[in-house]
Image (tube, rainbow, N blue to C red):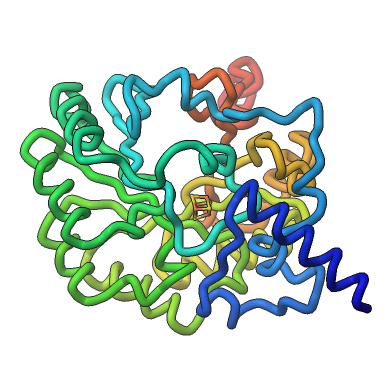
Amino acid sequence: MLRERADLASIWAAADALFPVRVTRSFWDRMNPSDPADPLAVQVLPDPRELDTHSSDLEDPVGDQARSPLPWVVQKHPDRVLLLLTKRCPLYCRYCFRRTHHPAAADDPTDAEWEAALRYTEESGAHEVILSGGDPLSVSDVRLFATMDRLRPVVPVIRIHTRAPVTHPRRVTPRLVRGLQERGPVWVVVHVNHSAELGGDVDCALEGLVDAGIPVLNQSVLLRGVNDEVETLVALCEALVRRRVLPYYLHHPDRVSGNAHFRVTLERGWELYEALRRRVSGVALPAYVIDPPDGSGKVLVGERIDLACLHRKLN
Ligand code: SF4
């Protein structure tokens, strides 16, 4: 028993050194930490397999570094800029594709770095800015709103990619909702992988955003041991739609070092997606996408349409 505890502590410490181990009280209360198969616990508790290395692992699995013109900025398309407000998150998902960004340098930009990032974005001609991280709601309302106010005159649409309404729902305060509403059009893209993440205070946070007229979309990551069964995906998509949250993307997992035990094959992913497509309505069906390591941006899995086959169907 003592030996087991010591082993667990050393795995925990080793995993934490690679990528912080943090869980919020709210998320903890929704999971069963003593069940090794609990779909929420496996997302956030360290696993010895994180310490293994594989030849397929990548340090930069979606090619962000090659598309980063300066710190805290990623631009893969001429009309869009991704701004990374921070590396901090309320909790850390063990599969995160940015987990290797963590040990390097500081968690937040310096004032000079942030000014340069904003100036680049203003001059980029982008029509849409995606505020990301880390979790962009890890920064204060003051910094978040100042960023939005600075960009608003030149950027028509702002998107916020955040898991905070799910990991730390108390962050979605009336003040935050009002501030976002006043700075519209703003789209909020949350991140839920399993229907058990929903309910209680998470539902209140999502409802607060939707009731304020802020469109809320969801992206999920297809993860082995979390949601790689069709019934689980159906339950998730239907639960989101009931809450007026649009299932937007189902991401094929990225091959970052430390997350090999979460990966599914493309063949399995496609099989699941085809089954999901037969089970849910169009409004509940996310797009199945993969973000290739060359940095060219997301592509739809199975996008190739056989036009000859389509013509045969139409005639
Ligand atoms: S909240 Fe998002 S950015 Fe933060 S660890 Fe989880 S997946 Fe990564």
